[in-house]
Image 1: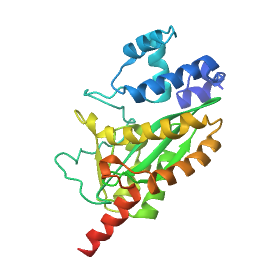
Image 2 (image 1 turned 180 degrees about the vertical axis):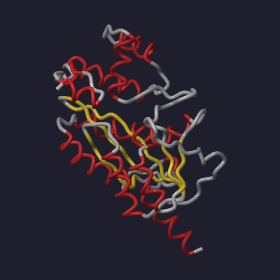
Image 3 (image 1 turned 90 degrees about the vertical axis):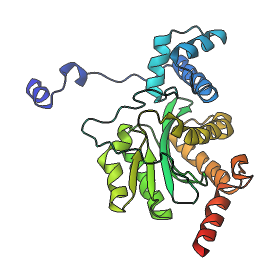
Length: 266
């Protein structure tokens, strides 16, 4: 066992460690942190801790920061590095500066969010057409890895074809070669948010706010399977029936399909 640990560069004590599930108190606290993050995405751990204290929940800033890291969320503000790429992963340049997005399949984007459950939490990834706000594909997972992100990407490419530009942040799930390879194979230009480009996450953050307040918080899902079934229903509603003020009170499907037909006819 000692020799195996040396060869794999693994600490022996970690082999005997059994991960502990989050306590009910931490799960409730994480849900409240998520609610506050959606309401005030620019708040850091200090302000969140103060907000929680005002709500009657005494908690330290460090504990809030620990739970936020576990949830995979962070404050939105201009900073040098918004996410940490995987070791050895290639970072691509940002391509959306001064680009006018005026048609479907011009620019797609992807991001991850935290999903609170009755007995834990899961992660949701979505692929979004930035012009129409249409959700092209999505997946749910109980681990923040690249595999389920790749599944969502491949589904979007198979159903709707390749966009001209695909934009993400520099998270390790998106800088992984398994994620970028399908895009490069189809000639898609890969774009990644860099220094000063925090504002680009706002488009997908609006989707996450809608998903959380209009479905997840109302349903109180218990398992990832329940989340998957429920979000299948919600995203059909979101694409087909939910009108958007920013789209002149049209649905994402109407913007995606009608504008696509108009551009093709022209």
